[in-house]
Image (tube, rainbow, N blue to C red; front, side, top):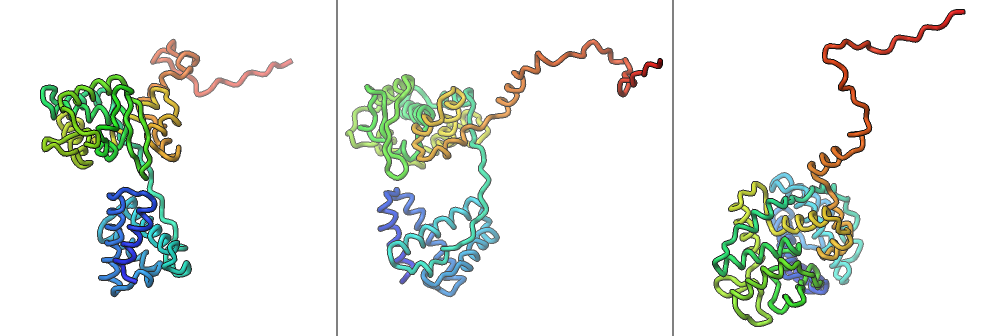
Length: 324
């Protein structure tokens, strides 16, 4: 068996059967290709069925020490290799006892960081950046408004077709991870901005991309990231801003507005509620506000009557016992 054959088999049979996106499959193949290159250079061209757990540990150590990969990148590589060998075993091309990752040690979990979130004032500054007297400016304004107003991913936004946008019903249909479709309601303000862009853009085929470039093609996921980054810089926002940060902001603002977590999960397209629970975090401003609202503010006795120069005893003197 050759590496090319196994990687192709994994991509075209296992990954395709799971309904993964072509970009996701390409990323998996690129990761497996990096491991294959390591094996060819460092391990004397071993075949995929000759790799051992020690070989994989050496590769992960190589990523940390020589390529300076962090915990997240190393864990991702290990997970893809585990899934690769598990799939090859499931398809009957490798004996389960020969799976080098069958009893692989569990890696240290990456500390989960709180997402970067924009304030309402920062969102307003961002939305005010696109020009309102050009087609591209109105397109970008609609793009930013939709990302913040629905929390959809950049890939979902890039895949949005004309037929997916129903402004009369105030809904859009997006295709998320794994090919799962969901229909999302639109706020009246979002509908207004999208309708204005559609009018100035002109009619297109139902199957055409909703957001169009100056060359009449659809906006790619990369182009959407670039538009958000550029307008964040123009707005003077001194933090990393991307479509995913707008997605975090959308969810966090809904939590603060009192929307139930289950509803936010469905809007975001999460399969598990645990993926949504990260938005239950609170900010330092929330903590200060909670501390200021504590009942101790009015219940604790005041000592303001004590003068600064009054000398107090260390403790009350002991009570004198009465003598008969």
